[in-house]
Image (cartoon, rainbow, N blue to C red; front, side, top):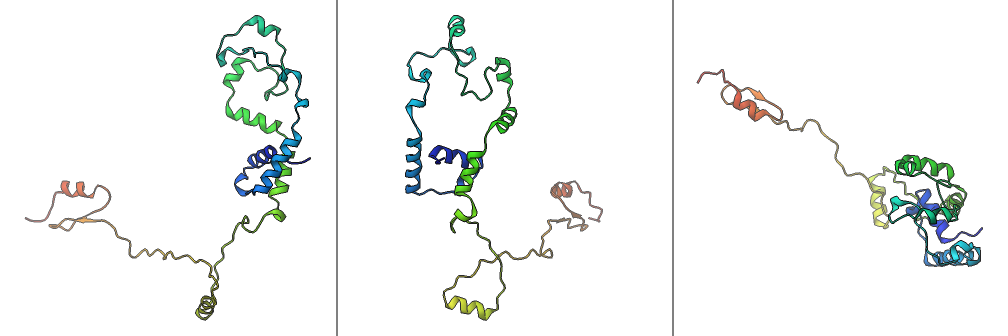
Length: 200
């Protein structure tokens, strides 16, 4: 089977890897061409070809429902996700988690895996798309100066200084009369409420 544009986009989206692949203009033209070749108007049933007006079936979707028209209508349920008929109460109470579980059971992953094998397998990833691994290397100062003289780029090293606990500043308020110390976020209030025991 030839991959077309929508199967590629859907496969990458279902695997959450659409950000990993960049398609060029030629690849996009080929995918669109495959889409046009796979599409044929003769495959559509007669139900879709005639232009008769659609009948409102569900009142909660808006519009008026004529029960006589609804009872005489023929249903094409091949496109429905949840089966033939979903009662109104069940449809309204269906939460997203239940829907996700249902879709997880029903979705066929064959197309998505074919897209993954085509675009994301290791042998098809270009160098620009591979994740870069940064390693720290320790070189002597002579080797570093030689590499810089030859125009060789050095790996980026962390420039963050180590944390020194000795220089940590602790905010303290000291009473001038009795040298009492007050800490914490309410230190100024504590100083104001403080009854100094030192002689005035």
